[in-house]
Image 1 (tube, rainbow, N blue to C red):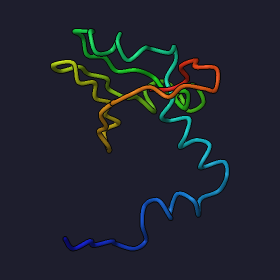
Image 2: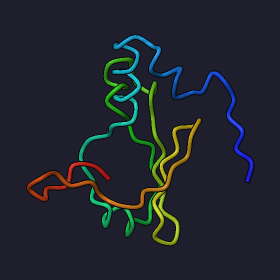
Image 3: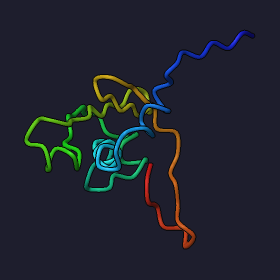
Image 4: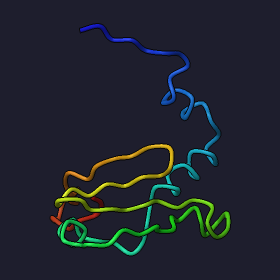
Length: 98
């Protein structure tokens, strides 16, 4: 298998940005309220959801599309699509992210 990496890597570029830009990037991937993975897997609707960055930058600025197909939950930012595969828990076994 041949691995090809283009430079500058998007990940490296993110870390070269200012702290404020990195903060906005993280906020553009956080939604509230917290939805359990089970809730999302059993939902039959698709919806656009505002992220925390939207509240800073204005309505419709940073939205994510959450959809469920055959129990598989996808989140699409318009640039990147990801599949939710599990839940992250804190030390006291409380869910904190999916």
